[in-house]
Length: 503
Image 1 (cartoon, rainbow, N blue to C red):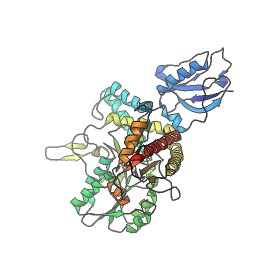
Image 2: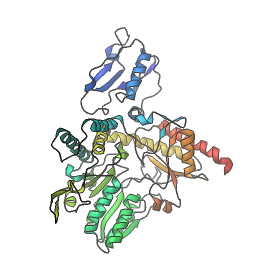
Image 3: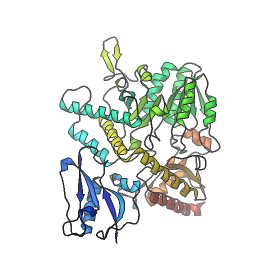
């Protein structure tokens, strides 16, 4: 009995209006319809289709073409006497299932198959998102909110629908708590320049950790310089995680704001944000959460966390670049002044003064990133179709495999907690003895087609705290596999071998 790769409907390729078809063998085949190995999901606009072939090799070709179009995905391995010629050896993992949805991953780089492990910097985009952008620009490109013609009405509907999808995705109480920004950096600057300048005074304290991304540090340095507020920093434990106990003991009646990351983009550590929020609120402090490395990878519920502000970016969660999200509690947003002046954010404009729109429009001056927001909505449809809990569980499996595999390389040092201390995100920042991370990253790219990042990862103070100038970082997403981790390990060992005569 031969082994065959089974294909199934792709529920996230076309989240709306699609019909299912079965790709069965023709009447001459020994396989009955109940034994059909293949099915797929096609947009209803393409109509119903039926493929016929007399040999399984013909099906392999047809299925491969459909998979490239994103209409088909592998789901499992099955055994069938009628499936000769389609041999695979194992159950398909989530990475195998979803990789076909990302056209960019199907290429060679420097003569090797691309292994993309730079997902903490940005994620790749599935066909569903690329299609949503194409449909907007080809079918209903228009400005939002200010037109009554059909294209504008359609664009407005889709734009606001994307906002509603974001709100549901993070469990906001209302979509009016969702503000679209250019990115997470702008979202933090928005809070700093509005809430910060309006509420912080001389001697007030802003509590941060030494592991914050520059985007969650530099804006607060600027606010402190302008308002006289004081920045206080929480150190790391010996296990290289933010010291939660020190953070709690640093809170006082002077603390007005706590700014903390949910998941570190360098250490891979996961902060107990809900506990931090609860403790901060006892002192009347507000909490801003940098969720750029958590929203794409796990279930994030803003009502459960209790955060006052939470920010994240589209491009790290399969969406387009150029759009980010600020979630803010309604009462806070209502009392914040505008961030920028111009069209869209006003209620009435007179020569001498203006009145302002209610949130979120108050903070979205000018023409927004319409196509990008719609693309983010499509990304949320895609992720939701897979299931964020499923993504998280698979990535935790990948995370352990990555950590354990890298730990077996004697000259390699991983930063952040080990699995003995706490769970980690699916990323590792590391260094090799006597090999600069930039040399390592260059060699992996040029000799093995492996994309990892080198540098300080926008965490220079953290790197100084760790006693280093830079590190290499491999960061995974749900479309990665253990086999790609094995390729990374092999590439690192090859790098060590190459550079050993020079050390």
